[in-house]
Amino acid sequence: MAELDWVQYWFMFPVSIGIATTAMLSGIGGAAMFIPIFVIIFPLLGPEYPLTTAAAIGTALLTEVFGFSSGFVGYYRKRLIDFRSAVPFLIVSVPIAIVGAILLATLKEQEVFLKGAYALLMLALCPMILRHTPPEKSAAPQPAGAAATAVEDDRPMRSITGRDGRTYKYRKPRLGAIGAAMTALGGFLTGLLSVGIGEVIMPQLVKRNRVPVAVAAATSVFTVIITIASASFTQVAALITAGGVNAIPWNLVVYTVPAVIIGGQIGPRLQGTIPQRSMEKAIAILFGIIGVAMAFIVLREFSAI
Figure 1 (cartoon, one colour):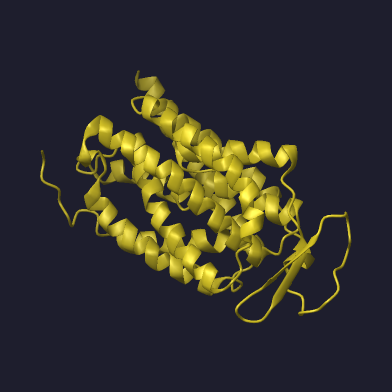
Figure 2 (figure 1 turned 45 degrees about the vertical axis):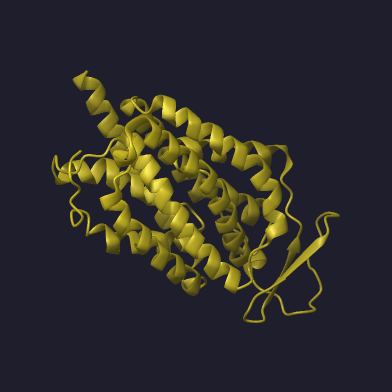
């Protein structure tokens, strides 16, 4: 058993803080940014940074569990999480995410397939996020006791009062058949590729159900943490069963985990300081670049076969 170099990945500590902070602000999973670093950047650093795609996915998801757990605590303290609205999404996402994680264990040797699937996912998410235009009026907090506006249907009203005293009013989110299908797909992709659930929950809450952005981000974080925890524990158990304890690069995890815990606290504190739409545009462009880069790697590996 090779001895681990415990200082090899020191640079991932500040990088992980930035990734976790961005994830908390956007409600989108940080694993979407970790995997390109593990799969694209690490090989460029040299052969001493080996990480299989399956190990990268498992490590990213395990790291994300701690980051979103920290973010959950931050949003919980701000009293912005709508737990009741999260339940219908979790009923769909959790079991499907576990199925995806089990499938990853059977595909762990299919490096090109996993990279290709990830490239397609990033290229699909880019235009989807760019098209998402959250209604600004729905994102604005309303004073306590204010009357509901723009009654669109007979769904009951919900009200969340944050720790700062601001009250957000909106109608009970509806999952529906389309929403259930999107959530199932997001859960499956999260289990298989560690990305997907946050990207489908946020648009459903904000765009389809007009939940205020602050409440939507907090509720999305809660939904994501439960889903990714279910998938992560399944993935890590499968990796360890197949490759032993060192199948997980612990000398990398020791830097990413404490860093994302810190970032998970910074993100909720910065909520509202950066326009949500600007954040979404930046992430969409980043996903597009990642998708193109990953697709290039896949084509290069195919041509070498």
